[in-house]
Length: 377
Image (cartoon, rainbow, N blue to C red; front, side, top):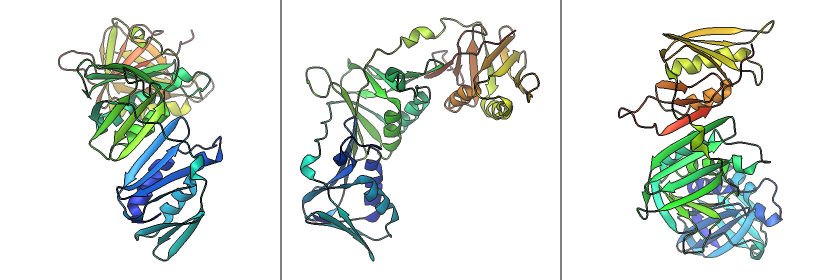
């Protein structure tokens, strides 16, 4: 194998592929990054039996070939290379990188022991890469981090015609986002439960292209029924799906509300951050909504206390309600609106945070449900 490649192109491709490398590989070869050079270009691959990553880059190929080298070491080397073209060659069990006056020699691993990457299922449709990244970020924040309940660590993806619905919950909050996409057929349907961290990292990393192709198994193909694939900007990745039945989340949203309050998002975020400075771990911030204002309070008794009032619009009866401040701040960071609307029923039942209401009165595309903390006394 012998090829020349632009330094930045190599560093970018290696860094993206290295994201998939397992921290503690079950077998040594999974710590490797697979390089395959041909007339078509360079293809870099990584796989940990759960997630695969593959990226293509343009090279000036002199001799086709393959090699398997330590992925993390290669990534560290590529980050440190000087700004010159990189010449990569194999010589027996060694791979050499020359860049300007710098030269690195890496030992190779047995290529024949490296597992084959799963094939991408059939493409089900495409979605704008930037919108997809935003939508996934809005929902992934509510996913659980407790691996003992794998189902809650995922994002549920529901496809119904030209609508994709993303949902996740950790039992204390629930985030739901609907967006439009371009399915391969008008009656396309499908459901997948994807690890939230994998989906968030993938969506964020595929914004270099204009759109993302989403590949789903199932149907009559019999291929890849337990994986989902994403492709964009010359990058391809697959993820194994999670098992388990996701909660029936739609029933968690109140059928009707007793009232709602609207607050300017920026000042609300700033005030919450200030007041929560005195809120000890897992203690709530209390919100007292009155006509024309909301009073934020934290801390009790002999402990440090904080109080701040903000202008607010209230429709309905006065209400005192308390939340974990971190959960509220997470939601406010994702509503993408200068006005935050909090709709509620009672102080002990879930409230729903959205952005500025739609002009046609329809359901907002992003909804963030939060469980309140019961106030004593």
